Image (cartoon, rainbow, N blue to C red; front, side, top):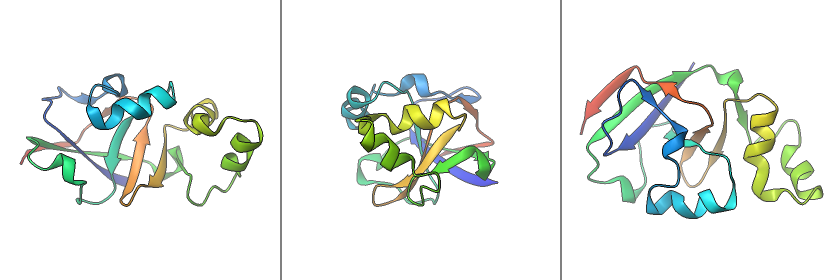
Length: 125
């Protein structure tokens, strides 16, 4: 299992849903580049500076095999997306292949999930 950490001011009830994607300044631009809604999670407890002062840390768990690792890219999906002119659609490609999300790194190890996920713990920060 892969433990995931999501930081937010929203008081989610049971699930973290990708349908909220693009509502914040830091996800708005990403939402314009790809039509795939997604929720962002950190793999460690560290977080980016714009999450300082948020109210909640949600902890979820997911099976590792449900997440595609775009850093290792074992199926060469990034090369495929570039060859097809779909570089902004790597999320769509992974979602269409049945993955629940992707693992990557933006300076932090992160996971983007395409589906709602129940959290197992919610902590006030």
